[in-house]
Amino acid sequence: MRRNLIQFWTYSDPIYFQCTRLSYIKDNSNDFQNVFRVRLTSYQGRDITLADGTSITRNDTLIKIHLHNIRLINETSAIQGEIRKARHVYQTVQASLPGLAAYVRDHVKQEQIKGIIGITVLNHKICRRLGFETHSISNPAYKLFKHVIFSTINKLATNTSSLHKTKQDPMYLFMSKQKLLSAYKE
Image 1 (cartoon, rainbow, N blue to C red):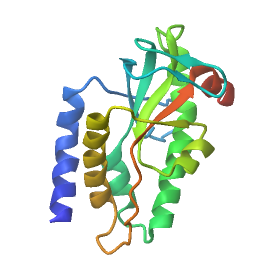
Image 2 (cartoon, helix red, strand yellow):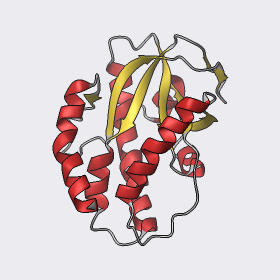
Image 3 (tube, one colour):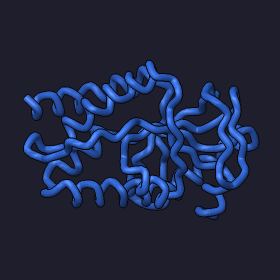
Image 4 (tube, rainbow, N blue to C red):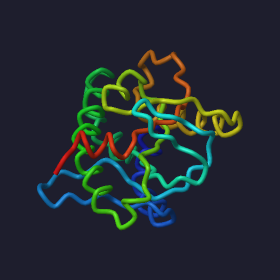
């Protein structure tokens, strides 16, 4: 059943991609495929002040990042052990950040973009190590919706025999444009 669902998701993902406003980040320097799919968004959450002083308020322009989850599930399917899988995801995200910086730097609306936003249930310490800040989702209905989505993804991504009983709440990820561009200069 799990294999069939993964196969269905793999084949239907291009249709989902075509129905969204997501874009792939192209990296012309090598054969590496960036794991982020992105789109410009207008922020609608509560006001947030990031550690570097960047203030994110309603209607600010952000780049919304989405991990290419089915790609990661397929890439890690042959990897034994949840720690090794997590390491692969971490290294793939880390390798994708310079491409994200280049995308923001070259974007036609670069001046209006204030930062990066995403939603995750990945370990928040790992997110901070990657340079992101985590903030709670205040809308309980949206938080529940995201929890259901991420629980489904997690069930497909992990072996049914694994002992992942701990519940990680979905959280917003933020990184200011300045922090991203400073960390990954041309």
